[in-house]
Amino acid sequence: MTNDGTQTLEQLEGNPWGDPPADASRLITTVHGLRRKPVGQLDAEDLRVLLSQQVGIDALVPYALDVLDDNPLAEGDFYPGDLLKAVLELPAQYWQQHPDHEKRITQVVSVVASMDLDAHYAPADVIHAAIERYRSR
Image (cartoon, rainbow, N blue to C red):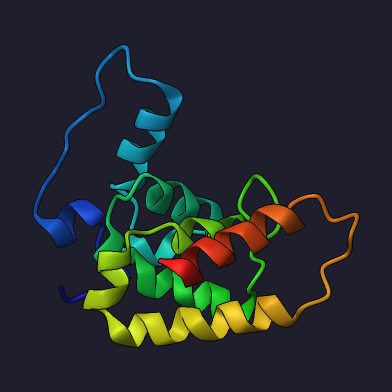
């Protein structure tokens, strides 16, 4: 899949979804809209939403890893580290098929695991649990 960041997921995958159903939830409407946005313009929240729904994984993980390399606790709309959690919860099969990406996420995990997350940082338990689930897969 060639990707210079100017194409949308619909273009990259060759699979336009069309408009969401009239009675679609906000999440479904958002995902449909994000599939039409150039992948190079997706921010941490956009990546979190799509990857949490396991949409466009092959195209989007490299972008998410770039964000996480710069800021391991990159934040979407929920809390610092929510993008990392979404990436860590991808199927184990993805990481097995992409050892270069697995190496990158392992480095990010090592950085975060070594951080002294403040005890009052509410999502610390969520992030540590996601790391443990990733490591034990």
